[in-house]
Amino acid sequence: MINSKITNKVAISFIRILAGIVVLILAFLVGYILIKGLPYVSWHFLTSPSKSVSAGGGISGQLFNSIYLLVLSLLISLPIALGAAIYLNEYAPKNKFVSTLRNSIEVLSSLPSVVVGLFGFMFFVLKFGFGFSILSGAIALTFFNLPILTSSIENSLAAVPNLQREAGVALGISKWETIIHVIIPAALPSIVTGIVLASGRILGEAAALIFTAGQSSPVLNWTNLNPFSSTSPLNPMRPAETLAVHIWKINSEATIPDAVQISAASSAVLLILVFVFNLIARRLGNVIFKKMTAGGK
Amino acid sequence: MAENVKEKAILTTKDVRLFYGKKEALHGINLDFPETGITALIGPSGSGKSTYLRSINRMHDFTDYVKVTGEFNYNGQNIYDPNTDLTQLRKNIGMVFQQPNPFPFSIYENVAFGLKLDNKLSKIELDERVETALKQAAIWDDVKDRLQQSALGLSGGQQQRIAIARALATRPDILLLDEPTSALDPISSRAVEDGLVEIGDKYSIIIVTHNMQQAKRISDRTAFFMDGNLIEVDSTKNIFLYPKEKETEDYVSGKFG
Ligand SMILES: Nc1ncnc2c1ncn2[C@@H]1O[C@H](COP(=O)(O)OP(=O)(O)OP(=O)(O)O)[C@@H](O)[C@H]1O
Ligand SMILES: [Mg+2]
Image (cartoon, rainbow over all chains, first blue to last red; front, top):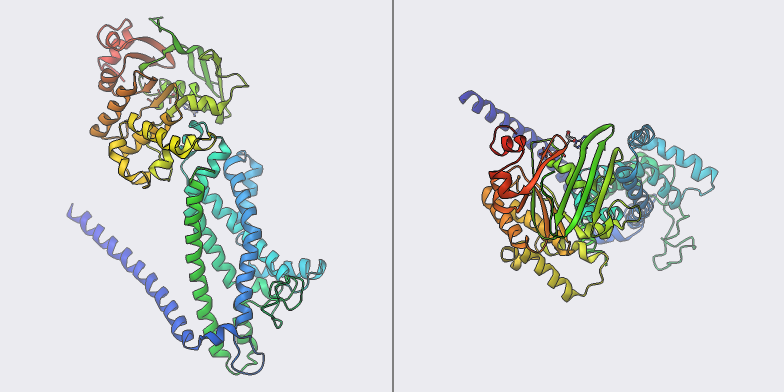
């Protein structure tokens, strides 16, 4: 009796220590990046364009590009991933073919992003002639993102107990309506977590974008909202360096005198961006949950 | 076969056989149910009670290796007719499961759910139906002040009564319950039982239970299943006091099972 109590206590303390170490490392990392970077973050830094040889540049273009690419690639990949996951988990027969498909998707989700980038470069940039562009980047990110999102959404759906499906069907609700109004809302918190994690990876992604969205940010005219004009920020055919790529580039090329400060500040901004996105996604998740569970009208 | 329903039956089943793959799990069940009153299905584990119950509202449809044969007649309608409107059928024959399984919505939305999707009810009608269903399930007083709170925050017994209200809200004729109180403590069980007794004179209720006391307390008729056969069906009093079959007597007196 006493022995098992002691072992129990030791085990719990041990687990606590491990958890503490994780928290400490995380706090150190976040703290370090913020303390190093935040002093250089100013309104001017966020809203002025980057400079290529002199000091005092900002990150307005890169910041916008990161968000724009994230939104675009989610707009493309989310509906596809959701559909695929619903099919795989709710409708697909349990046979060899489907389980092979499922396994391939899991393998794809660990594909190195450099490979995705080179593939995107060969196909979309060169072969299809999209050039270094937001479009090429968004498609590459979709390739990169789709398997991850599909498996995470599928897992979220699979975690909803079968009882919920039976309960819906027993109420005389069709299978499809049960999925839309019961299963997806029940899985929504975990689906949102999956989206947030995938988005974090997109925001931090550099390798897949260097070869597809490019490393330059043309001068943008923020008042030009015509997506076909070359100076418009919305133009999907223009090259678009993201924050993560910017950090990588100024560190590897260092043509600007204040590279250290700018990359520290950019890192801090990137971190905050991920955090803000996280909050927004969860809020949105709550709103969607309310809408969906309000009964389909 | 012992006595079946004398008054008008709302549901008659004849020679029901059910196969899980090659294995026959029900060996020709003949059982009728009156328009009102509570029928208890009792019998040892694995005797086919759940299998039979789930065949009534066609819950086996989703398991592709299950085959059902026999006659199922609900109000003059063949349940297994390929043209049966399953949505309507399942609104007419409600079901409550062993585990409380509220949807992750508010209490109100849980009960209104089956109504909202295809009935064009006004908000007032909807409120009325929800209130009536909650009252019938004997849970109204517990929840009337927190209808907008999540049903997940309720106790197991309350959740189970919400599940009953949810099934009642679509105004079924028949309510199927598969061991609805086996996951509940005695006090919650009693609350659910009281709710059922209260509505027993308006609906045809079919309840699977392992609890002999419960069957005695609430049911008007009892059907005893064993090894995929219906051994005997009679008034609850007769089953427990004057069983005709040896197996029934052994089971209700606790000799096995
Ligand atoms: N999905 C299934 N696939 C194959 N066999 C099954 C399946 N479900 C039940 N069976 C078998 O059918 C028989 C009847 O099972 P059923 O669940 O109907 O019994 P029950 O009377 O409800 O038992 P319990 O009191 O334990 O709930 C059992 O032999 C069981 O093993
Ligand atoms: Mg059972």
